[in-house]
Image 1 (cartoon, rainbow, N blue to C red):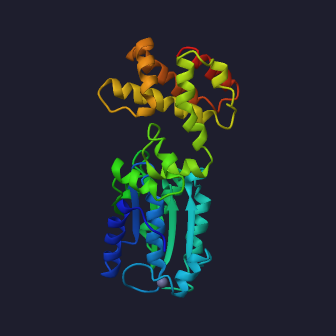
Image 2: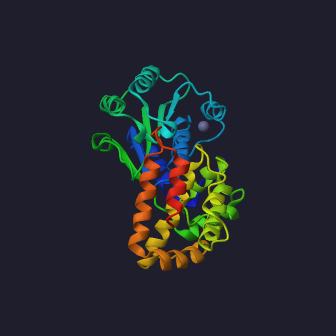
Length: 312
Ligand SMILES: [Zn+2]
């Protein structure tokens, strides 16, 4: 059995109760701040819906549960918008595939994670499917509050709002994860637990963990800008921009009274003495611009980043 993060269990139980009483909507939209766990929650809900037992959580034993475990259930379809735009053809194919009666269990389920990645035509195709629900078919969508879905889709769905966990909850939960201790050193970057796990899966923990120290060395003039940009290439420059942006953002917020992560203590005092708050804001904007321009081929991004850091 998978253990669900504690702040997700209440939402899961609510949906289980609705399923048990036969009052569950055929469309669910799981939303919340970025990285709070919409996707693992959705996957648990899908398991429950696919299970042949009508009551409570997935039994883990029935034929449907076994097929879900083997990722080979013919009545389950999934699209993930994390890796790019979801297009209308993908939705049409999926709707066609599930338009038949369930082959194995009681229900058919479509899961669309990061559904905000649907383009407008794809979103309209989903809307159409929601307006004419096929028998015993459920749609489970996830999205984040920072990039909401079409209001017409939202209004067709039962909204499941994932609460943002407290720092205490995140810290305690990270202790139960592999290398969780190291991840909690990255709170200056983000406190969203599943974003931290994703960084680990992508092998980016070290890049971020080293950044405050490198910036500090630059500010203390024990390292040069070219030392700092030494490991930067076209694949990781966006991560450097994210990290540097987060450092500036934290310093700006701290100057207005927000708490500062201890990893940025030295950086804050040097930066604020050298730059002042207005200039820090300019540096932040300039870094955001650099990040959004990264796809433009006529730029040499590493040269741009070097130019930017020369002004720190
Ligand atoms: Zn089952």
